[in-house]
Image (cartoon, rainbow, N blue to C red):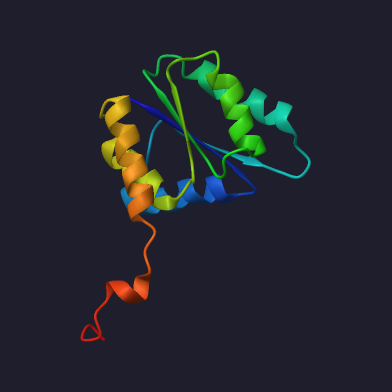
Length: 135
């Protein structure tokens, strides 16, 4: 089973995981790392490395980060440089997290494609999606 690790500035990752669990139920092999103002890159890197070490039996790790180039992304990139079983995607959203749990048993390439598709499809001009007769 693929493992999910979310990393964000502030509590976004933790709250996305809690919200996803409200929708899909209890989940396994899912972790959230929330970067606080008191922490730096080394603390995030160490927490991420610990999760990966504790779950080394996982066939693949998906790391979802909030923004590309930020501390969470850079910490994930450092860890991924030494591990071919890691995929990192930026743009963390609740839709991506739910899609991960629905599709988590797909191959890493298929799952990556699904997550990117879900993220792109999640951006809509909501008012233009409804016609005026829907009320």
